[in-house]
Image (cartoon, rainbow, N blue to C red; front, side, top):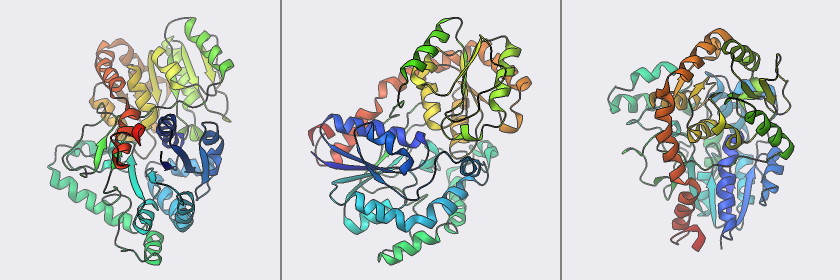
Length: 424
């Protein structure tokens, strides 16, 4: 059996798919170590994995960090330039220590030191993407957060989109000076792009999202394999789960309002406006407002609020789901087969929202326009038009059929030199 390190940074939406894969690996006898921010140590250890800290050591509950990181225009630059790059040398050292006796490294999206470590040590390395946007395809162009209007440019030929990606790459090069310094210190080629075109492992890259969002493209790297979503819900609080189940069972399916695990720390008036929208509609509602966050105002017997619940326990019972468009939340909503209203913040969320809208299962509203009057009107359209739910049903069936964890384990097994991870 192999010693495998899973390295990831970001929100719970980044951590949970790695935990899903880690649980699959552990179930067939592999030793699994997860390297991530120290704030996630409990999440790692309670799932039976060894934990290794990975810098930068960022407080995942710091609202000021989330406010900057979730900004539509400046968020990606802030995360890369201000949070990750100043500590890229520390990240490399931590990753090297975590992988001292490892047979395989599987890295998440912003673990930018992974490629350098693979080049220096020769460790087998698998890179991953959780959303279509980060495949940077010119044949299936995404919608960047800085330019949500870019969706209207999709009909342009692929060469135009390649040109735009090259222009973006030139801008990003100004953010990664410390990365080039690290590679220079390690004796590696400094002209290396860890974010766009050279982020992919040459031996295997796992596109860990469903064909319900995007199909494989001809311009994906040859090492790419699509697995489907890898689902993990997190811990269950039995008492809270019972109360939520009781509320759901008391009447018609509720509208579910949530902002995932990161955007919820910069919720603004989202939940209070959501309460008012539900009242305007005369509909039941269930709000998941986040741990350590303020409880919404105006609740009553038909509008309930809970800090947290596993989405797989709640979403299938929803009339529709209103959320921020994170890929993990979007995946759960698609699997539930219900209509969605998406209010994107930043990063891949605009692209996920656009794809769900093109699939006919969602509508999109901007943060600036999120108010009870306008939102209630859009939700009424989602609920009254059967077409949204009818189009959602086959996508839900597709996602359930893909079994992302099993597909990922099969690819990991091939990299380890066996036919499956279970046989390694």
